[in-house]
Length: 144
Image 1 (cartoon, rainbow, N blue to C red):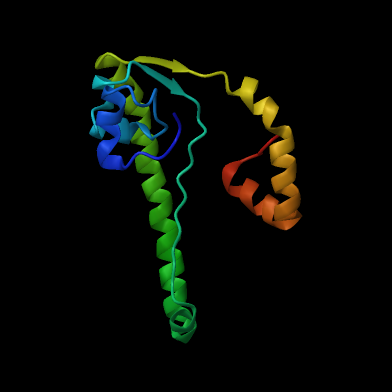
Image 2 (cartoon, one colour):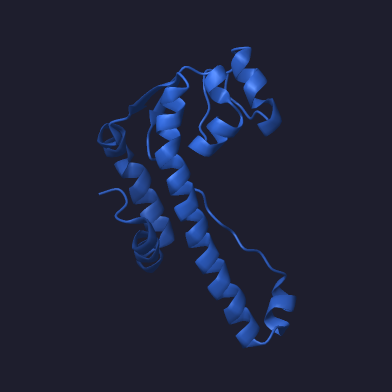
C-alpha cells in the first residue's frame, strides 16, 4: 500500500503494519519513537528539506529595498543554521537509533544514483543551464 499518512498517525500505521516503512529525517524517527515499530533504517542521503519563504508580491515590492535585504539576508543565514542543526541531529541520530535497537545501514547510493541519469537529464533541460548551475552551487554536482 502506498499513500499519505498524516504525521500524527505514522506510529500507529507502522505498528499495524499498514505500511512497511517511512522516509523521514532521523529527528522525526526519534521524536515519534518510530524505532519501537520499525526495525530497519537505511541511510540513503536522498532527503533534502527545502525552505520556502513566501510573501505577498505587492506588499513585498512596497517594502523599502533595505528591508527586503534584511529579510533576505536573515532568511539565508538562519536557513543555513537550521540545516547545520539538522546535520548534527542526523549524525547523532543514527547512533542513537542503533542504540535503541534499530538495524542501521548505509545504502550504496551509487547503485541507485546511476539509474537516475535520465531523470536528472530531464530536469536539467527543464531548469536550463543557469538554474542548474545555481542549484549545483548549493547542492553539489547532481547526476554525474
